[in-house]
Image (cartoon, rainbow, N blue to C red):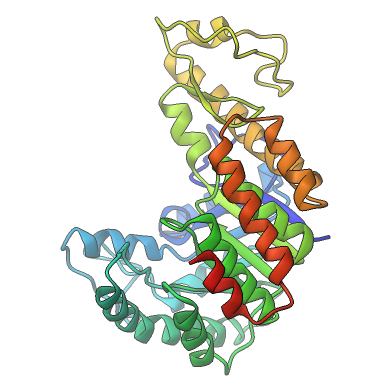
Length: 362
């Protein structure tokens, strides 16, 4: 049985959701852009004592600028931020990691766009492959110039199993400890397909980007229990919801608005046992000044997400057990049926050639 960890993203010393709970995701641009930021991050890690620290490469900053039609640099001879333009290259990623000393470093990458058309996807994959294979290799080379205990995860950016095969063949000259992968715009079946392929390739550790919804988390928990040594996931939704005065229902993570002048569904019980909620009511949240409400909701929302992840992991002994657990927590029948079908296929076809599963999930 593998380990399963939830990592808060975008946390700071004012609203970090808990001491010694879960992990901590930092990214290059927001936590390591200057020497002062690096010192502050080192102090924050020492203060909050996370179970695991993952350093992300800030490749998403490149995608944001690209989609906005803004200038990119992509030049390792230039600083991390050059003329106010983000330039997150492997040399900057590794230099920061050697100071921060995270448990895991995600190799530099340039994310692919969200595209549906097959021809455009092929062009996008080929364009980014040139950089992603080079940067993965460079990250490995830079990291291994200095003795360290940092585990390296490579970042997969592609749309199909064939893209996955091409990418990993292109970086076959390097060794790595795990794989980081976004799951945005993927169905549960597609995510399961990629995870099965990675497992069949011998990958033992996975980091999933931006996972906090109930059903993708359930899928990740099942794979952590049965296929991988460790699965980590990160998301900032605990904080995003708090900004909107939304309380994550600890039973199913559905959002409950607890801002001023709203009537809360009486069927939603305030029975959370976390430190932010214990012996308190929804009315307490509603009457708090916004700043204090935000801080407490950050703590609660992360606790609810972390606790749900551990419960899903515990109840993932069989497909039947996790499905029964979800049935006791949510009335989303179609999503339960979808997950049930995906996990049943995974169990039935895990020892078959991957194309059978690919054909089954579509």
